[in-house]
Amino acid sequence: MNQTQKQLHENIKNSISETVKEKKIGVAFSGGVDSTLVSKICSDMDYDVTLLTIGFSESHDILFSKKVNEHLKYPHHILEIDSETFPEISSQIHQTIKTENLSWNENCIAFYYVSKLAQSLNLDTVVTANGIDELFCGYNAYREVFPAGESEINKVMVSKLDNELKMMKAANLIASEFGVKILQPLLSSAFIDYAKTIPVSEKIHDSEDLYRKHIIRELASEINVPEISCTKRKKALQYGSKIHKALLKTR
Image 1 (cartoon, rainbow, N blue to C red):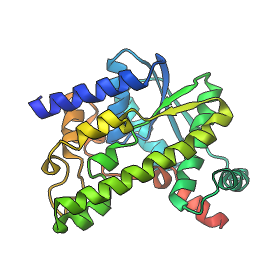
Image 2 (image 1 turned 90 degrees about the vertical axis):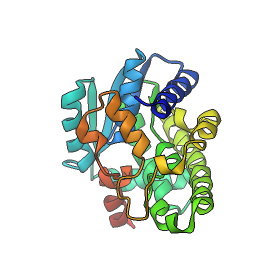
Image 3 (image 1 turned 45 degrees about the vertical axis):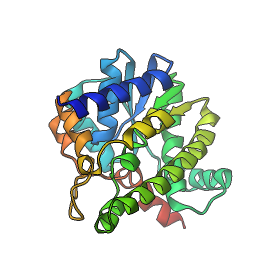
Image 4 (image 1 turned 45 degrees about the horizontal axis):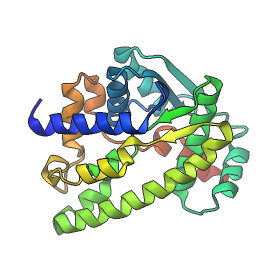
């Protein structure tokens, strides 16, 4: 592990220990590199980790998370979304968070089901990997602005972080119905400040870079995150769970 990876590892661990006080936790889990990295680090830190996956039947996240957990072998629970009750639930969430922002609605719906699953398992704390895509150039938007240089990349980062912090407040409002707290250790102000000091070249290489988040993937590989997860291209929660597709049908 090189020095930058070591520092990143330490900062993630510090942020988790400062944010997550409960020892028995659920981790919102898709099998992608971000949620698998957070799950592995939490488990290595002796948290009692249960993986929580939601999605429609046969959705990408359900199938892929099972495959990744064949390597991890952590307790893993899956909630399949019922297509009969989905329109009513998505409508209720829309009325609660009062925004037309499609991504916010999709994510809050996802966290509704994650929280429902957590409650059924007597878990009141769910940890997520939110923040990694924002801070380590995980989105396509970073490829699009890459030719304009670092200052434009940083503008996108500020905007993405602002949106994510506000969206997770809305997600916590939804989760609170189930007595569940959703924690995002990698959106803590200390971790954000640290992550911004990592050179952009460790995150994204050029405008054709379809993988991005390189230092995250390298650290994941170093700490024995399954290889299929380390090399997995990003698939956002709303797409991997098929929530996006289902929500468009209800509109």
